[in-house]
Image 1 (tube, protein in one colour):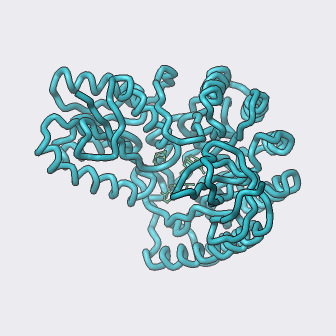
Image 2 (cartoon, rainbow, N blue to C red):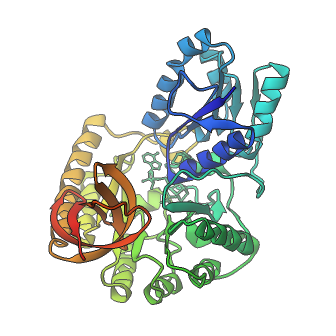
Image 3 (tube, rainbow, N blue to C red):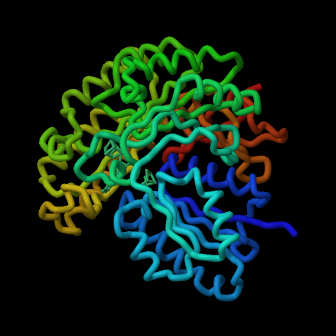
Length: 436
Ligand code: SAH
Ligand code: SF4
Ligand code: F3S
C-alpha cells in the first residue's frame, strides 16, 4: 500500500527549503508527495509567525482538518516551524486543536522523521521542543524548486531588530562549514540544477560565529569557480554588513547574478534607530551608489515596513522619498505587525487607519516605479533561465537581474538559458519572444 504526505508551507524561502528537509525525511520512510488532503497519510504544517496574518492563516488551515481527522483516524497531523517555536504556543495549540499528533519546532526539525516513527510505534500524541539550535548536516533533502536549488549557509540571527520575532524562534547565528556547502552545491550542479540561491537571514555575517573574516566574499569566490554554467544568487543582505568586497566579487564574476535584495525597512534615520537596524538613511543611499558604480545594471530589491510605532508622517515621507530616489526593481511592502517578545510590541501603537493609508501610498508609488523600470526593458534582449512552464507552450524565467519574463515556445526549454527579446511589460512582469 502506498503512503502519501502533504506539506503546507508558510513564510520565507528558509521555510520553503526546510520543508524540503521535512519531505526528505518522509521520502526516506517510503512516503510519496501529494497535493490532496484526502489522500494524505501525513499532513505537516511548516508555519511562520513573522506577522499576525501568517499565524492566522496557519490556524485557520489546521482547524479545517478537524473533520478529516475524525473521518480518517490513521491520519497524522504535525505542526512545526517558527510559530510553534514561540514560548507558550505549543500549549495553546494543544488546547485549541487536541487532534494534532506531533508538535515540533525549528530547532529540532532534523528529528522530524524519528518523531513520526515514535508516533506510529507508540500511538501517543506528543510535543517535542528544544530550546537551542544545533547544526545537523545529516538531513536528507527532497528538492522541489525546479531549476533552482536553495542552499543554506547560515542559520539564525543575532540582530534583534526591535520589531522582529526571527531571532527568538531561530536562535543565534550558526554558519555551516565552507567545504560542506561547496560539496552540496557541486552535488546540486551534478544533478542538473542551473541556479543556486544561498540562504541566510543575514548572509553577510556568514563565518562570524566561526571567527572567520570576509568569509562571505571568499565563499562566493570559491563557489563561482566551480565548473559549469550556472547562476549564483543569495539572500538576504543586511545594509549594516554588506561590504565592498562582496560587491567587487559580484561585479567581477559573471555567474554571480547582478541582483541584490537589500531590505531598507524605512527611509528615516530616526525610525531605523528605533528599529535597531544600525545604519542610517545616508549609509543606505551610499551603499546603493557604491553598488551602482560597480554594477550599473544591478537589480536591487528591498523590504519596506510602514506603521512602526514611532513612525511619524514626516518619517513616512522620508521612506517615500528614498523609494523615489533609489528606484527599486520591486519591493516587498509590509504593515508593521506587533509580535510578542519584541520591544516594539510594548510601545504605543499607531492607528490602523494611518497604517492603511501609508501602505496604500507606498504601494502606489512602488507600482509606478516598477512599471516604469519594466517598460524600460522593452526592446532589449535578455538571457533568461527558463524556470517553469505556466501554460500551453508558455514558459517563464528570470533575467540575471531578477526580472520575471514570460514567453512562448513550441519546444520544451525548461532548465535552459535562452535569449528573449522583450516586447511588452505589465507591472513587474516582462513578455517576449525567443531570439533565434
Ligand atoms: N533577515 C531579513 C528579513 C527577514 S523577515 C532582513 O533583515 O532583512 C522579512 C521581512 O519581514 C523583513 O525584512 C521585514 O520587512 C518584515 N517584517 C519583519 N518583522 C515584521 C513585523 N513585525 N511586522 C511587519 N513586517 C515585518
Ligand atoms: Fe529579523 Fe532583523 Fe534578523 Fe532580519 S536582521 S531576521 S529583520 S532581526
Ligand atoms: Fe521565515 Fe516566517 Fe520564520 S519569515 S524565518 S518562516 S517567522
